[in-house]
Image (cartoon, rainbow over all chains, first blue to last red; front, side, top):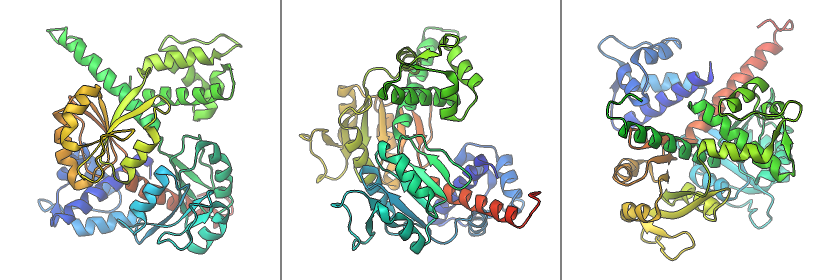
Amino acid sequence: MSKDVIERLSRYRSVLLRLKGLGFVRVFSDNLADALGVSGSLVRKDLGQHGIRGVRRGGYTIDTLIERLTDVLGVSGVLKVVVIGCGHIGSAIVSMYGGRRHGICVVAGFDIDPQVIDTEAAVPLYDVHELVEVVDREEVDVAVLSVPEEAAPSVMDMIRSSRIRGVLNFTTAHLRSNAQCLVHTIDIRMEIEKLFCMVKMASQQDAAADTDPHGVT
Amino acid sequence: MSKDVIERLSRYRSVLLRLKGLGFVRVFSDNLADALGVSGSLVRKDLGQHGIRGVRRGGYTIDTLIERLTDVLGVSGVLKVVVIGCGHIGSAIVSMYGGRRHGICVVAGFDIDPQVIDTEAAVPLYDVHELVEVVDREEVDVAVLSVPEEAAPSVMDMIRSSRIRGVLNFTTAHLRSNAQCLVHTIDIRMEIEKLFCMVKMASQQDAAADTDPHGVT
């Protein structure tokens, strides 16, 4: 499965969970297509490739569709994660997902600061040197990394020596995936910069269109 | 410029800023290529298309390269943003970028909770109903949206009636870009799910390779 397919299947599932919350029972591929801004035939192809077929005129049953997508994506049950680095972003994620929200559960946090460490908290916060032991005991495969940039490489070494196989990297450090551990980076600073760049380009296009009454730009 | 090109130019710039911080003066396209995991010829093409050429054997001067990329991306000066919704993620971003860090400056936050509102704070926090007026006065074009999902559509209406032209959306609401306002979504929950899915697929591939001594899978 390519990254793009995983992305779309995740998004279908996310839309379906929300529709279910609204009391909907059935959905048509064209509705999902509208929600994602893709074509209906792509939705049918994505689902069909995983053996999921709708009923002509009847669409898909939302419950069945969620079940099948959950299965295909392998995201059933509780997804246990740890958060390494409990500063601004890290503690935000501990607060958001500490209580098993939407199937995700932060089972532990780690930090280097003794003042932050609190193994008795609802989500226990450990010294980062206990990482290998704790993730082993809790059987956690995925970590959120939100340490300062300069600490990222050495913490990444600790992660690689643990059972962790996937890292959601919020640091601006350039960390690479390898066969043993996948790294996916969310660089908030760069996302903000990119947005500025796109806003600027859109404004320039508008300005060009404004000065060109025939719209031939 | 396509999104992919903007993405790469932003990443070149980010690497260069870090190299400069380490005291480096010159860089070769192949170094940038290594850092991003792309080919050297793609780096040279990306830069060449914006009139940036290196010196054979000498590479590029980092300072000049940063200057040109900053110019091309339109991210010079201070990038002023507001944060709408000062819960977990919102206040993390206010804390991270409240002090003009890396050229980004959160000039104001907004919330609906009177207990959070504090117009005397270092980064003033206003009632969300003052959004249009404040962004006008502060001349802000980009907002970070981090309100609860159910509040997102109505807040998005307020945003569209303001001068805001770009939104970095941390909510799980499906908000769409239109000609007046670009929306870029970072859905942390979905990113965690996708990571689980990819880790699972990688494990299955490993398992398949393990049971196949000839590696023909």
